[in-house]
Amino acid sequence: MLDGDPIEAAEALIASGRAAEAARDLRARLIAGRGGLLARLTLIKALLADGDSGSALAEAREAVSLNPGIAVAILALGEALLAADLLPTAIAELQRALRLDPGLVRARELVAAAWLKAGEADKALENLRQLDDPPPEMLAAAQAIKTAPRSDAGYVRHLFDQFSADYDSRMIQQLAYAGPQILLDLAAMVMPGRDHLSILDLGCGTGLAGAVFRPLASRLDGVDLSPAMIEKARLRGIYDDLAVADLETALGTNGASYDLILAADTLVYLGDLACVFRGAAARLAPDGYFLFTTEAKDGDGFELGPKRRWRHSDAYLRATAAAAGLAVAGLVAATPRHEANLPVEGFAVALTL
Ligand SMILES: C[S@@+](CC[C@H](N)C(=O)[O-])C[C@H]1O[C@@H](n2cnc3c(N)ncnc32)[C@H](O)[C@@H]1O
Image (cartoon, rainbow, N blue to C red; front, side, top):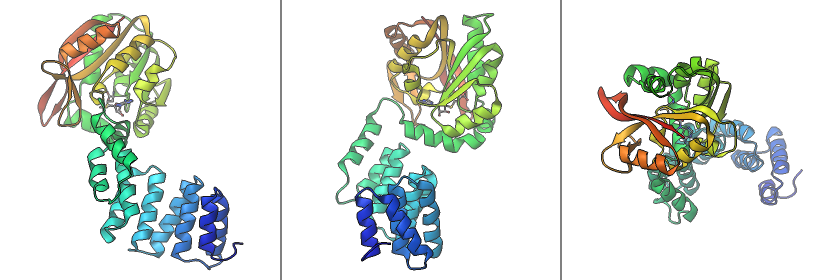
């Protein structure tokens, strides 16, 4: 048992890297009915320091149910939810704590951290600006997201984790999504009659493109940033291997080469495509093809559109392909989706070595 002030003793244990001991002692006190809210909040802190976010979350839920409407208890719940990577509910609880006590600096920092994790730089900055002394590394992280020539991985993951439940019906019914069929038609044009292909599906999502290409595949692998989308893809039972990974990283690792690399409606989350094209060139079999859809930009270069999707120009796609040692086997106008019932102009592109 702890000597002296049990909370101070537990804090000292946490500070000296003995959080598990602090948690054990505090839990014993609470079970013996000798601890209140402060003991439970310190227990949550110890559990978080010990990396046990599941137990911290259970204790935080208990703290809120025993102390409803108390800002620091709700803050602890928000912190535990954030540690468990449950971003939407973490943000909601931290905002609830801030409504109860707008001066709660820790809640303001944590909500900014949560928005950064979700790749939402402006929302993070909105909160950081309300702090007297915003952590410089958080300000720098927000600026890095805003200036990166691609969508933040956290933003993509958060977006599609939330979107995954009704992704297929929204894409097909509301957006008349045609990316997979457009790529299948392009494959028939540039690599007619070929099958038994080893295929890598970049940003495979729930597997809409994988399902269309499976009949041509001897092997079908998928990569996606969103664990929830990957779970949906797994349920289809059509992939040989599925990985939660950033496609730029996945392409950059040494591994099998593919007859066909697909990216259906995926490259709209990347601005600068140089890294992807180089990675695809390295992973294509000698007679392989890289097929993808993009949204179109007039003139040169690439830009971020109002829907936070990147658009690429014909000139940029050709120049970047050439720089990566890839030849353009096909580049045609296409309409991968509709928005507000209007066609979104794009390209369907086939690159080869
Ligand atoms: C609009 S969905 C398209 C999904 C699928 N290809 C289809 O045709 O339905 C875009 C997918 O790309 C994934 N994605 C975007 N950027 C990514 C990246 N850098 N690395 C891996 N996956 C990414 C997203 O998580 C999302 O599942």
